[in-house]
Structures are given as C-alpha cells and as structure tokens.
Image (cartoon, rainbow, N blue to C red; front, side):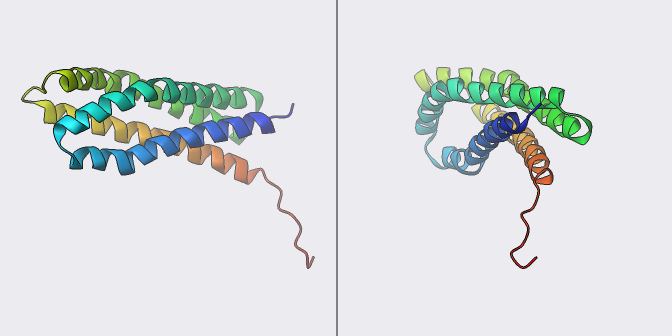
Length: 159
C-alpha cells in the first residue's frame, strides 16, 4: 500500500502545527509581555477565538494522519509515526486541559479586570504553551526524519 500521500499529509499538518506554536512562542508571547496588560488581554481573547478552530483542526489532522501512517507501516517507520501521533495528542491534551481553561479566564479578565494573582496564571499559560510547542516540534522532527530517511538520492551527474 502506498503511504507517501499519507506521509506527506502527516508531515505537512504536523509542520503547520509546530510552526504555528513555534511562531507563537517566539513572537506572540514576547509581544504579549511587552504591551500593556489591557491590550494583551484583549488581543489574547480575540486570538483564541480564531485559534480554537484552526489549531484544533490542525491537531486532529496531524494526530489522525500520523497514527494512520503508523498503522500502515512496519518497523522503525511505525515507531516514528506512532510517536509523532502520540506527541500530537499530547499537544492537544496540554492545550485542552492547560491552556484552554486559562484562556477562558483571560477572556473574562479582558471584559472586566484581572485578579491580583493574574501573573501566576499567565506564567502557567506560558509554561503550557512551551510544553505543547515542544511536543509539536518533536513530532514534526520525527516525521521529517522518517521522510528524509526513506528518500532515495538522485545519482550525481558525474557518476
């Protein structure tokens, strides 16, 4: 059975996931920390409305395609694809049970005012964000390794 299209889908979706989380960790979080709190809360709340749809879809495609690839392959390919799928599921679980509850509080704070201990919650959100970014990046690296190790090099012109 040909698994190249499935491998391509899993690599693309996991790359998009890792890239989105990586961009957020490298650019959005430092920007959040550099602007006034009211602006951060308002922007964060609006951003999460869009991310809720796109990121969940990307995580689902990444996890399902990686696990399907694992089911259709054997040996090291199965292990790498399966590990990538499990890491993507870990990204989802970290998001769902770590970031999403804090996002709900941030949405409330944007409409009212943050509590005195808001900084602790924001630090926890960043910790969860770093963890899900790491799991997504490692999943992508595993799938990239799998794709690269299976390619046949073209013969050189001087051969």
